[in-house]
Length: 217
Image (cartoon, rainbow, N blue to C red; front, side, top):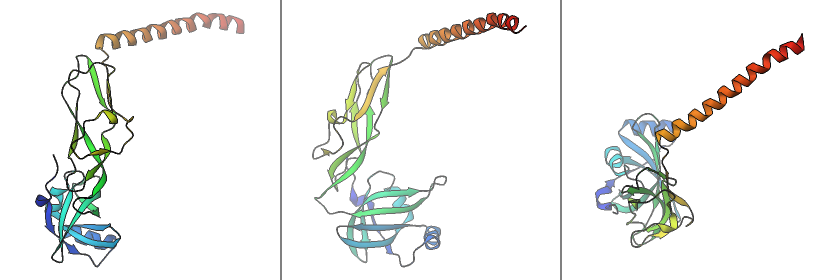
């Protein structure tokens, strides 16, 4: 499912002051500092409305319709810098896009279904790089593991991509790996064997000790 840019329309302000102090002042006012660039244009420093931007940027590869000085401009969120502790967006890098053009983006993998019993499903690549129309970027790429047996592997080239989406990543990139689950009994047996070896080693060391002492005398 692609995002609806009409839901991400917001009026933004141009920024005239820069630096950490200016950025903190913008955030205190409930806004988010951002910069927009691309298509050979000079970077435009703007302030996004905090609440609307936070909602829109919940999704990766968010496409925003920005109203600047009464003119609409489409932009793709390329880098969202978040506070490591607080639920705050510190800065956003936006790329100018146009309807109809294709952009290279990382799209998340969404696993569905249940593999065969006693298997473990590992997502080796949580995202995959694809080429998609700027205004029709999928929210995720669905991978079904229904009934897959241990030893099954899904590579990037095996993915079923939505219509109009092209793979950029190496087709041999491992995306999902299905392995045999280690049972509790097998794990216990393996630990038991390790314990026996340790005990045997300890007994051997103990038996050698008197001989070593005798030699020393």
